[in-house]
Length: 301
Image 1 (cartoon, rainbow, N blue to C red):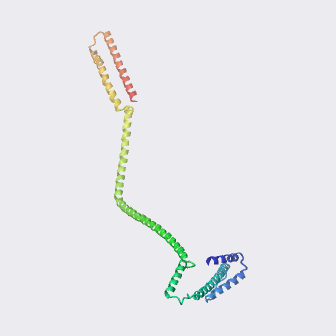
Image 2: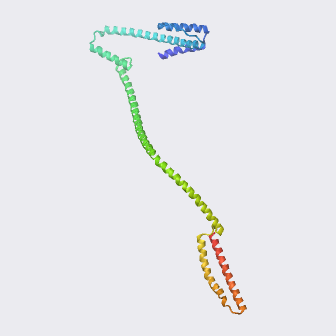
Image 3: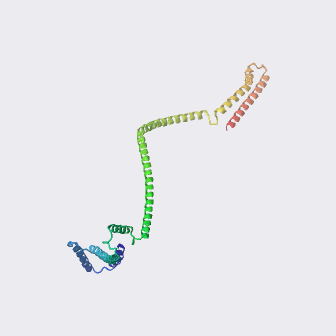
């Protein structure tokens, strides 16, 4: 019925939208439509100002209402015609049943009740007759629908169980997070105290760092003044000390000889020769010591 009304009403609305007519004709048509509608419910049309906007809106409403009314009248007439046909068909069937002795008044009450139940079932299953095949087809259709509903119900139940499980896990997770949050809030005060302690220690360490850097610079300046270079390390110094001991062993006889110059003979020529010989030996020892030192420094590089 709604589809029929829509098919009938749409062309009328389109025509009303395309061709409006003059404003006076629209006002007159709107007033007539309002009077008819309010008269139908036993009321008077209220007074209000007819503006172009209200006239246009009411004219569209009147056009749609008239189209819907016309469509409803057509459908109602169709239903009345069908009802008349059904009544005439029922009267014809009743005459046939009475002619064969199956009138409703002559049937037992249980037969009448069974026929009524059968008719109700047929109406419920939406079938046109009460043959067994129609009942089987209708029951099969209902069974298929029932199966579909059961499948949907099982699917929804499964989804509900899944959502319930997710909800339980979410609640458990929320509880755990709340407990963790409470624990962290309890740990805030000790952590703040520890941070303050770290800040104090950091200030002390920064002061110590400045002090140690100043001492380091002082030591570095002192080492530069005494001629210390990074190339001289502990190993080189130990090696040079060992070479020094060796040189002392080698020069000890020369020194002893030089000390014995006090016992030189009175002959000046022999004394001069002895002194020159000792000087050559002493120069050779110094040159050897210098070579050893240069070799040690080159090895450390």
